[in-house]
Length: 294
Image 1 (spheres, rainbow, N blue to C red):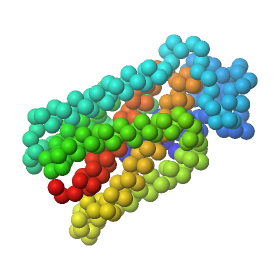
Image 2 (image 1 turned 90 degrees about the horizontal axis):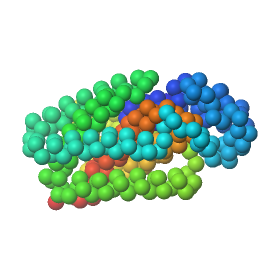
Image 3 (image 1 turned 120 degrees about the vertical axis):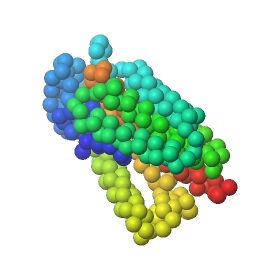
C-alpha cells in the first residue's frame, strides 16, 4: 500500500519496503530493527542496529529514538521549514488569483486549467523516486491559483466562507495532531488498512456520482448536493482527511526516527499540503451548505 493521500498516490519515506511507517517499521514479533527493517540502512548505516531496546519500544507502540548524529538527516525543523515554503506558495498563489482574477467564466476556466496542471505535477512527483522541490513548489503554485479562484467564487455568494474554511482546516489539523500526540490514535498497519479501504471506497463512490451528475442521471449534484446529504458526505470527507493527516504524522515521525535523508522533508511537506488542501476544499463546501442560500 503506497498511497497516503486521498487524491494522489505517493511513495512516502519507504522506497522499497512498501508503505512508510507500517511496512518499513518492524512489527511486534518481527525481526529486530536492522537492515531489513530500516529502509535507509543502505543509505548511511542503521543507527538502531546496536540498540537492544529499539524492538522493545516498537512493540509498545513507541517509535525508535532519534539517532544522535543528525547531519544530513531529516529533522522536524526541516519538515516545518519545507511545509512553510510549500503552504506559503499555495497561499501566495491563492491571494494573487483572488486579487487579479475577477469572478467570471474565464477565471473559472483558469481555475480548472490550474487544477489540471497541479494534478499532473503532483502525479509526476508521486512516481518519482526522489523529491523534486521544483515539482512540489510548482504544484503548490498552481494549486494556489485554483484555490484562490474557487475561494473568491464561494465568497461572492457566501461572504466569509473562505475565512471560516481556513479556520476550520486549522482546527481539524490541530485537533488531529493533538489526538495523535496524546496517543489516543495508534497508527498501526490494521488502522491504515481499514482507513484506506474506507477512503478508496469513498473516492470510487464520488467518481461514480460525478459521472452520474455529468450525464444528468443524478440531479442537484447527487451525493454532493448542497443539502443535508451533501453535508453528511462533506463531514465524512473531512474525517477521511483527518485520517490521512495521522498517516502523514506517522510517516514524518518514522522518517525522522529512521534517519531519513534531509531531502525527504520535501515529501513530508508535499503530503501535508495535499491533505490540507483536501480538507480545505471540503470545509469550504461544508461552510457553504450550513450558510444556506443567503
